[in-house]
Image (cartoon, rainbow, N blue to C red; front, side, top):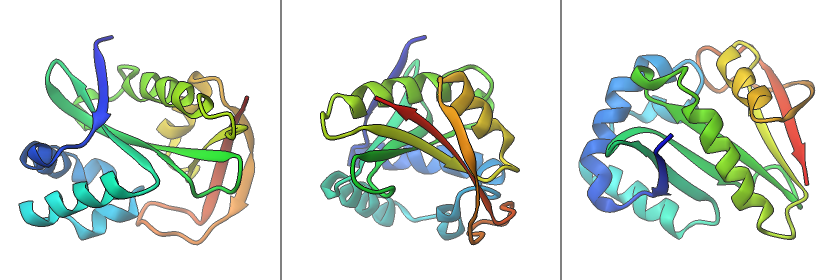
Length: 164
């Protein structure tokens, strides 16, 4: 698969906005950040600058020059750990894109000797994310109560883990 992951650039703002607009119905049940959509182009560019300057590593996913989603490595699960997040444009689901992105992000995360584990967290109603985690070799750890943040969430968080 000729999937490219690279950090967002301000010039990506129009195409990213289109990809998100095309994906909103698909993403809104699971991703709290979609509640702020649509962003105007200046706010989208500001967001790109913010993530570029932050501690997380956030990437766009391209296939044949087209944005097919986004992904990232997030330092929100404690010391020695990284959480992976991802979304895929609905026209490109079930093609292994998220699984391939997760595998690449794991390689990057484990390139840091301080990272001992990588996790994927999702609501159990988001069945597709569980399939991605399993396909990428993660082990299911369990389910834990979690305050719903998006309309499709049940208030439970499924946690998957891959150890170094």
